[in-house]
Every structure is written in C-alpha cells, then in structure tokens.
Length: 313
Image (cartoon, rainbow, N blue to C red; front, side, top):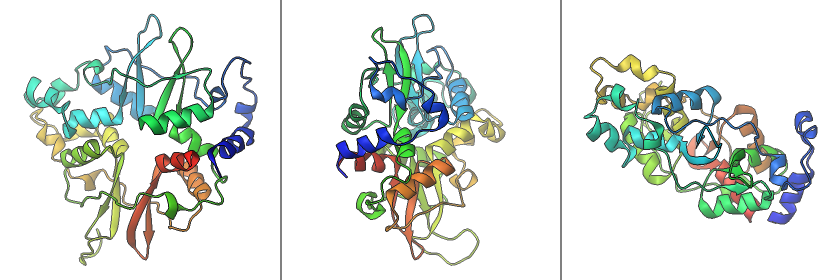
C-alpha cells in the first residue's frame, strides 16, 4: 500500500473507546487524534537522575524540557542522551572530566547539561502524513506538538503509528523492511561499551549473540539476549546502579556486564511474518523491536522505525 492509502486506513481504523470520545476541534490537524495530549515534562533545573527516574516510572524513551512559566519547549532529553552521559560520547565528559568520575556527583547535574536544544516539533494543525514525513526526514522517533503560542500540547511517536497499524499491514512482510546488517554484541560487553555502540550507531537495541548461557557449546550467531537503551536507563533510573557503588566512582557502575541487565527471554519473529502481526506483538508486549530469527540464526531486526518506513513507501 502507498503512503496515502495507508494513512487513510489508519485514519479510518476503529479507535479505542477513549479515543472515540475525544472530539478534535475543526482547526486541529488529524495528528491530534492519535497524539498523547497529557505530556509529562521536566524543567531544565531537574537533575539527570530525576529525569531518568521519571522516564523509568512512565516507561518513556524521551522527556520534553519546558519552561514552567510559559509551557514553551526548551529542549528534549532522550534515553540516548543519558547513554551518551554514561559513556557513549561527548556528554560523558561531564562525568569523566567535570566530576572526575564521581558518579553520584555527576548525576545531580541539571538535565539542561545533556538535553538537545534544537528540537524538531510539529504544529497542532499537522496531518498524520506530515508527522510520518518529518520523522523519516529528520530521523527522529517522536515529535512534540506545539500550538500557535509554541506551548507543548501533545507528542506523537513511532510507537503511536505502530500501534495503529497493528493487524493492518497484511501485504508487507518482515523480510522486505527489516535491517539485515545488524550490529550485535556479546555477553561479556560492559555497560560502557554498550552505550558507545548505541550512541555512535544511533541504535536503541543490540542483539546479544555468542555462547549460550546454559550450555558450554559456543555458537557465534546464536541469539542469547537483547540489550536496549531502556534497559540501561532502567538500571540507572530505578537505582539498581547504586547497589554497585562503594566509592562513588563511575567504573563501579559502567563496568557492569550487560548480562546483568539484558533481556534473556527474547521475543523474536520470522522473515515471513506480516508487519501488521509484528506491530500487534509490539503493542501487546510493549516493545519497540524484534530480532528476526530462522533456524536459531539471527538474520536481522525489525523495529518501529522500520514500520514507519513502510508507511513512507
């Protein structure tokens, strides 16, 4: 299906009762019919630790940063920004240089130190097609929505589209849209190493392959787990990281192996699965990507981003 046809399917698809009861004003674009309108935000004075805790509590991958007085958006902090801070790239300098490796001191820096200040936004008058086009063009997973006064009034993400397309994409199969050149890692990787891989390659998840956890037989491409940016932020935001701390030094946290926090019971899919069925699994399990496996071999990965690309075809 072409994008226009698919968007029409999405628009006409029966919504849940709560969505049905939401009446969109005539001057609003149809993006407001699927946008989340109760947006959790933080002020730029919130600490990195507080922001991570809010993300974990609400199962968010991003938090808009707003001015408490005007409601205008000042920036956005994502799980990738926190991974960057934890060793992924430039923001790690805050921890390593400014705080000389003192983890407990660094995490109380204000979130404005790691947030992105140039935020791609969407007008409340925009259409679903506008949102899809902009996400694909700018390579972002979500767009805050602002009104004519630049106040945030909603947010829409790849997941919102994936959920709407659950069961709809019946003529598209995983093999045609999955990422085949998969960046992967091994169970012995440390959190610091995983953050570097994710940030440098703009990845939210990495399949973990190698020696099976329960048997001594090594198999180089055997899927044994998956580590996601959410897993790392959760480790950091639900205070599990603090169980590792005795001297406050960063290494006590960043040297943790990913086997301690990765998901070992991985939900997978097949190359011939329908995208609509994959979207349905994502909706039911609350996950954003599935490794593609056949005969126990990792062949690729299919994500919400890939489903969004299917809309853009």
